[in-house]
Length: 397
Image (cartoon, rainbow, N blue to C red):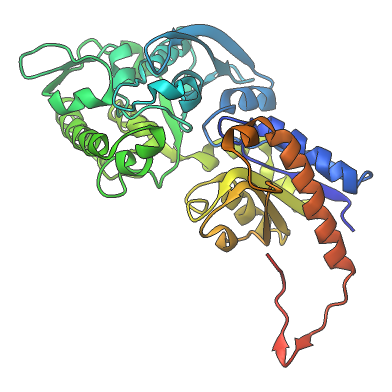
């Protein structure tokens, strides 16, 4: 019997927040299992919704303000003060996320993390002892250069002139003057919740892996790659970074390389789920489930590399719980995510992306209902130990 269902999805980029996804899935569960206990756990990965979710989970609050958006215009944004009062959460997506970059302006060589630095400064003004920066869903590829500029660093070209904002300018970076950096940074613990698989440089560097998704042409990808390699060299030299490889260290490529810039300021780059999920008591809640439902926009070979469904499945399997994953699209490798027993796409028929984004909640609810009815049908079918001398598979995907 499915008496208790845990619903633990990620958000769907540019469509549904994690909370909205959890609500849509719960509605589908309710159609099939009206008496089941549904435990909704909208999960954050450092991207959109992180500050809001952690404020709610800890009895904290959001602080609203205006800051510089990714294309240089002011945007309304926020950071969170957690319940204990000594920790602030800066969500980079809330001020430099891809959703804040109009499609006509998607040029990762021009966008900036300047607003992230402004949020960090605003958090410092509250007197907190710890600042947690959530990385994810970025619309930038400037290595965190903009954030450092907002915090007082001067980025200079070979003639001593300050560089404009944007990742394309990093190819001209000759020197960093850190003398104007906000002195309060030395008195706080700066933590970065990031995907450790994302590195700054090389063939798996952030410009090559994520640049095209943010609108970069092949030529721009190469320009950004070279600029970020130069950024790492100059950062290491002028901020006297020791013990951290800013090019290839885990998490240095997070949010278009923001991880590298903050690491140069002394931040600790930590696996995001180790930092974020402890606030949600996820493991204990999974242990009590009869079925775990998770979801994200795309399930594919990238999912095991630090995405929410893979982490949910990994933890659920520690307690022997079955996992069903729902996704906007099922790509190569969708059926091979460790710990996921079955997966199901939410589109009932081919449709335009714009329509799918608008109808995402409805599609997710309907898909949940379809998938659960199949689960219940499978539970009623007789299972034979042998089929033509071969053991029957334990699950069908």
